[in-house]
Length: 146
Image (cartoon, rainbow, N blue to C red; front, top):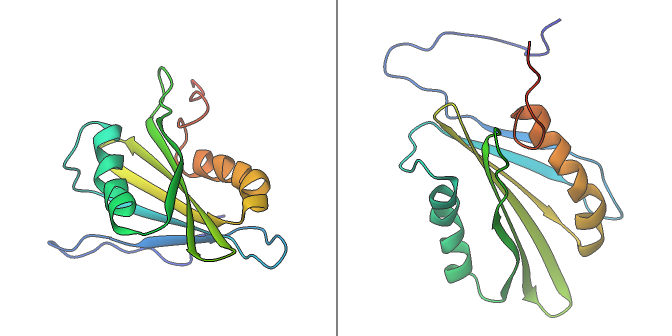
């Protein structure tokens, strides 16, 4: 059974630019919402360049940002992938952790992002890896050969 509620062919000149949202598990008072944005017009062939184009604006534009993780996680024979996590303190005693996973596959750039608390980054954040793999197979796990 197809879980997609509708399908269509767009007229010439129109292109799907949907932003996808996936509701994740709640932990404490935090709701988790995984956002996926597709970039069908890549300006870069390298996932590092693709990620830096987006993360440089975060590190230079937000006050109180502390980068927690910033690295290419591409494994041999898998999709190009990059993880970026930062901690933002917009006010005293308010800490937001935001995790990005950038993936290049089949000429499309995938940008996943989700906000976490310090605690949920260690619990729900681990599950984000499974969600990314389910949506873009071959990112964290080898592709199954048929």
